[in-house]
Image (cartoon, rainbow over all chains, first blue to last red; front, side):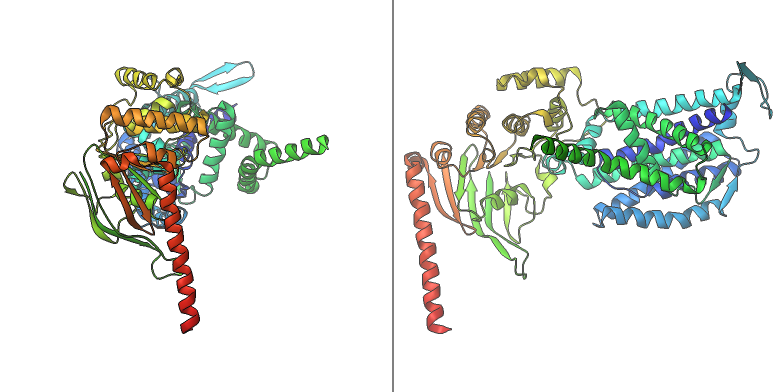
Amino acid sequence: MTQLIGSYSMGLILSLLAVGVLISFRILAFRDLTVEGSITLGGAVAAAMLVSGWNPWLATFVAFLAGGCAGAVTGVLATKLKINGLLAGILVMTALYSVNLRVMGRSNLPLMNEKSLMTFAQHLGTAEQPTASGGTWTIGRWVIRTADLRVIGFLTVVIGSVGAVMYAFFQTNLGLAMRATGDNEQMICALGVEVGWMQTFGLAISNGLVALSGALLVQYQGYADVQMGMGMVVWGMASVIIGESLVGSRQIGMLLIGSVMGSVLFRLLVANALRQGLNPNDLKLATALFVLIALVGPSAVDAASKKFRTAVKT
Amino acid sequence: MLDIEQIRKTFHPGTPNEVRALQGVDLKIDEGSFVIVIGTNGSGKSTLLNAVAGSFFVDTGRLKLNGQDITHWPEHRRARFIGRVFQNPFTGTAPSMTIAENLALAARRGRMRGLGWALNPSIRHELYERVRGMGLGLENRLNNAIGSLSGGQRQSLTLLMAGLIKPDLLLLDEHTAALDPKSADQVIRLTEEVIRRDKLTTMMVTHSMQQAAHLGDRLIMMVRGRIIYDFQGAEKRRLTPEDLLDRFDEVRRSDLLDETAASMLQRQYV
């Protein structure tokens, strides 16, 4: 049960990554690989600040801003310096590896007894001091730590508010223009929007959210690691793809909800696969294969069924 | 109103694909005039429109709009003054967004886009009225994605979007060429209506000799990046589709002559 709750919390945290990927890959139609670096950047900044005793809210917010800067750099490289978008992302991602090491001072930075958003969440609305066992509820055979439930409640509120803000943003004049940028660049340019600036701004928001996800992840798992961003683009894409098939709609609100649902479901699927005996070393291969099948599968099935139908006719 | 002074544009200069698309075009367009642009394939008529819209910068020459020098303005900056409808119905609208959202985007053409609601009730109401005014029955489908509409409907909406904020200059680039005849007629009727109602200064490229003869109050014909005929006033009104076809024939004959002359010279000198 603890494991299930853990996976659920992780899924919620990583749903911000999924929303970030949704914004760059789907809404802006920009293949942004900065994500792999910016999620670590968010984690590194948050961890470094917490270790130095900063307020966890401030640390998390600064992590968001740092991610936004990383995204903006990719945007400027791609739109002002006209570097291929994929390459711009790779350059920034690579540079961020060193930046992250600088920020953390070493490759792995554990949070010991520092106050974090998670310690804050664990004793939300209660006077009890968080202890190793803490309070527990027993439902049938399951023993649930109330602290874990508080964390889930806290994360739900955070993710819900971020989602609501993003949804509202995409209904504003600026947000509408951003969606149109990915949908039809020529049209939005003819309507007076500077496409390059809009893409840069969108990438900043996207990577800001990804870094926010990294900051929460670090506070949840209790350490930052310079390797933690590896494979995160594909992870985010998997969540977005699952989300799209779950909600079956291209409406912006549904896409946002879908990304969160997709992230949680994917995390649960992975946890289950690991419990069934999937070797953790094979996890990234499995994730990549999953995304490959999700990308190629539908058109392959279409082609096959068309072939089948014509074969039946003749 | 619009002053085009000696503009030239060569694409891919110095390569085997070099195209001298505009070779010194001079044109002054008065406020409120409706200019038809015709020409053979590759004559530079669409290039001329794109040069005005700012899709690329001209190599030499100047562009002035309302007395302002816009030669070095990027496309998105010129958009404040220029409304456009493209040949491809897919170019003018964002397919995965709704009709209302597309219109809301056009309602802020060339303006600041801030954090105000794009579709507040008053804007929604105004858009409803404008769409109803088109008489296509789309006013009850404002929340449908544009991608679900036909080419003709999309082109009509693009036209409405281009004129939603009154543009100083309307550019129509063969905007009925990709439509079936019935939709094309409908879009042309709508075009005339919009231009007449708002007295829009317009440049319209067309392939249709019918449209060229019957629409507009001025007609220019382009060949090889230059304007070779410019009909205005009574002269334009007298033009028939047959006259225009004759002119095209003339151009073709002189082209042929050029080729034979060239080959004759080649025989003599090479």
